[in-house]
Amino acid sequence: MKHQGITLNLWLDDNQRIRKFELCGHAGYAEYGLDIVCAAVSALSISAVNGLECYLPCKPEVEVDDPQGFLSCTLPECEPGTLDHAQWILGTMVLGVEGIQQNYGEQYVKINRRRWTPC
Image (cartoon, rainbow, N blue to C red):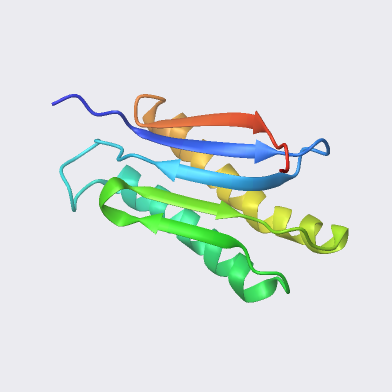
């Protein structure tokens, strides 16, 4: 069975700040329970969400579907300084995922950057 890999979608505003991210899919590097690529990306993303929820005064909107390998995190409208602080957490997550992508390849981890357009 062909794997699709993990896709990290990032939505960036006009100031290149991350306003939302979504992770979907499974790496397919190894069988379930032994997939170090999936485990590493999951640890980074869950830690980022936990950090946002713990340290920001405005809580992110989070959706999770474990069996599908889906995690979505959207930052609400908040003070510009708070949004800047969130970037430290989110930027660290992205650096980690980029490192995994460089070490294991785009067949396991893809990163897409998109333009944030608030509704």
